[in-house]
Length: 113
Image 1 (cartoon, rainbow, N blue to C red):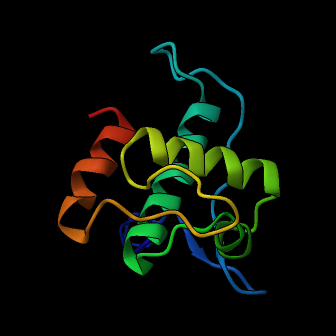
Image 2 (image 1 turned 135 degrees about the horizontal axis):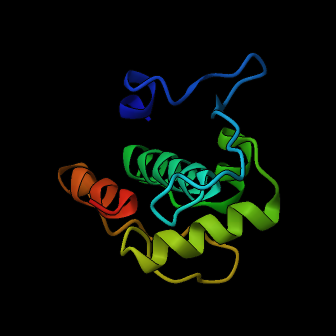
């Protein structure tokens, strides 16, 4: 999350959690829409949050990122595909597979660099 704050892409929300800039639906000229960039920002924020806390919980993503259940579940599935968290095991938090030393690699993969 610190990297997103440093880049001006996230800031603390008044009610707690984090506020990310809203994405529009415009195309950036490279075949990617601004919505893709917004989702990448949200996935990056989720990855930073999960890795920094070492706690992979959908409900934690809902609270901290101020997203609904469906979005938090989709974020957790994306983090699983990236190898950040393990598979769901009932109602337990997912095992975090990525440490802080691998966060830069994960963020670069999210951003497509």
